[in-house]
Length: 266
Image (cartoon, rainbow, N blue to C red; front, side, top):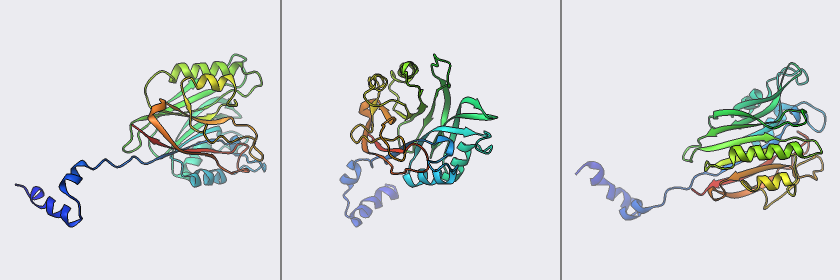
């Protein structure tokens, strides 16, 4: 008999735990994930001020583990040549990956993902652009939170024109690319579509709207009337939504941030 076998029953008794209880106790629940979707308006607030530290403070205060950011400049003239994703990562202490949608003012304009954990297998996915206007993309990465199953994190920013043809085609492409496998997926962004539109309805065939139970408008920031920012999930049975809310930040950008807290049920 080794020492562990000899002394374990005595130690358990000391703390009032039986050996049988110790052997059959359920594993600890996984911690919740906090997911934030935020359109940054290239760092310019509703007051006209370019202020990345203010945006970083909003992200940090939210406690988000995963963040999908839209309208992010990288070394453009209008934002002083700053690599905004890198700077926000520095200010928040999160990791980042950046996806360029297009060249702009000597730099790039696109989206970013922030994460507490490494963003692996990062990919930029071009989306349909039938009218040849502003290019649109989705960005995806694999994230492995400690103790969690590996998951896929996607960010996007769909077309904003009044005619929804491009948004519709983009939604179909996203369903085609991400809507048919069993990988646990969190999909966040500015979809430029209200919940009752055909764009969100077709995405709803493959994804679950995590904030549907507590809908709140996200745009414009000062007096929001439109719900166009979302956190979507798939497969439906892999998640439980703990909470979903639009944060009451009305100045730092022209959108309000959407925060969703999730737990895995697998």
